[in-house]
Image 1: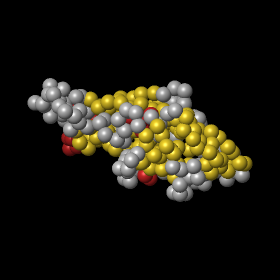
Image 2: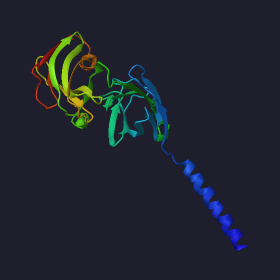
Image 3: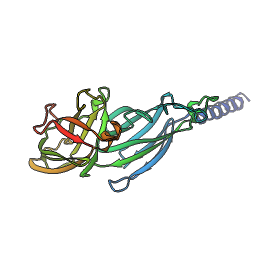
Image 4: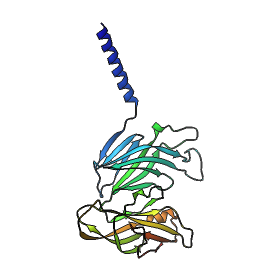
Amino acid sequence: MKRLLLLVISLIFLLTFSGCQDDVLLPSHSSIDITKDSPKEAALKIGESVLLNNEMLITFTGVGADSRCPIDVICVWAGDAEIKLKLRKGNLEREVILHTGLLPNSALFDGYEIYLASVLPFPKSNENIKPGQYSIQLKFNYNINSEKKQIHFINSNNDWVLKKDALNVNSANIEKDELVMSVSYGGGCANHIIDLYSYTGILKSNPPQMNLVMSHNANNDMCEAYITKTFRFDLSKIKKYLGGQTGTVILNTAGTDGKPIKQSPLSYRY
């Protein structure tokens, strides 16, 4: 009789524990295959993840702040929602913050571009959004070998994305809304990730100035071939950031060694 009673108690405990586990938001993830020619999207709730190409795990960890204008109110500014992501690829792990109304609204991590497309639900003046109600829409691009790339904004808090492997800039010139660069590097046995970042700060001169910096991840390539490639960096984000109207901005551009490239500064008329 005692054994039967103990068995019943044990079963009740196990069922109760299992039920509690079901109520907890455990991390879950879906898988997406993505190439440079097939950008993808994913919707995530807090605690959910998406796995890109079976190597890049992106987890929506929370909402930092939400000052968006309620949909039933007329506001001068649309406001901003701040969301937190955890990015993990192999031994690399980083936390990033993206915004709906401020910068940065995208992140670049080891060849993957992550854009924040939207945050739902939209706030209402008489309702508070609970954490479990939030969902985000993310867009992904994989541009590891793409010759046309976006420029991504960073600030001093997230300049960890900069990789400083040796890179020689042979030439740099602006063609309409593109910065065209010829670069060379040693390697030949691994994928090299070359990107260009812009700091969000604007130097108030006439014309104004912005600081750009190159990034090069050689992925520990020990081969000795000398590779030369041309990349075209889209400047339209800078144009939009400065208001989108006609103007000129001086682009102070640094290489991976932190020193100005020989073609710097560059004058961008938009």
